[in-house]
Image (cartoon, rainbow, N blue to C red):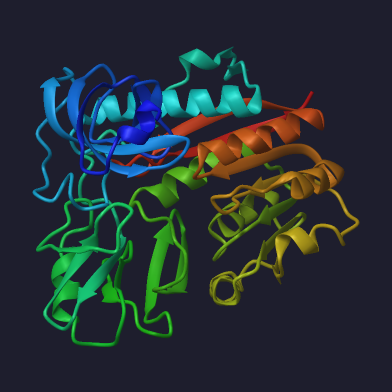
Length: 396
């Protein structure tokens, strides 16, 4: 019988934490077996409880720190380590960004073959804060809570349906949990709250409403509370500024925004192409596109299309100077990338919430003759293992 077969769920083992992994975990080894470990920091020596066993790896949670990292801090939230909402509350905010930088570098180099970006070796790339005032707390404007009957609300534990009761969530905007508690007797299932940039704070109803007014720069949107919108309060403004800088659109350009949502990027950048140009936005979610139509009716240069991107893109026969690409977490994929290569003249601006997907698509783009020339990594999800990357691809 091998060593791995003698390990049992619930067993306490001593581990030395090796390195950070994508997804909010760290990697350690027990008798040669890979362990995906929560609540550790690279360099630490810990006692950990085995929580799951598979043929290829183990999962474990730290239960005691024997030798602590200098970057370990006391978690600000009483539910940290139990609630599944945060990964890194035990890590200083600056070191969280260092860990995320390491994840992005590893994913892009391993999956994408990227060696240099921003004119420097990929090893020098660093994830940065969204704003100098970032504290890591009270940033999340869209939140979802599990209902505990009609008594209370809570959050699910990691990889579990077990719900722990909470009286606050420190990464949620102020008042989110109290609002959900107040409305817990309404409806069924999870309770979602949303706060707009204009200060509206609502519970999302069964139809995805009520309406919210969002403002970014000099533009406003009227959207359903349940429609997709960037969750960090500072993200829409910073994302738009970065995409605008990378796209570098000129009057008369034709631009394409794929997976456009409610038109955050398309509407914000439409003024750059002016009425001499064209901005085409494609989104498959009907409610999001309805929100876009409602909010962008003053822009004659915008063409809003409700369609599945992967199907629509194979049917068009026109070229665009710049394509803005903000795909779901799985990425765009080889077939969409091949079509982008066919229709894009100058630049592809890729907005990615998953570095592994960006790495895979970067490889497809490289094989088609595109180079990642600029990259920004933004810590749009503090206290979690998630990171947002915005990349500029240009032809060789």
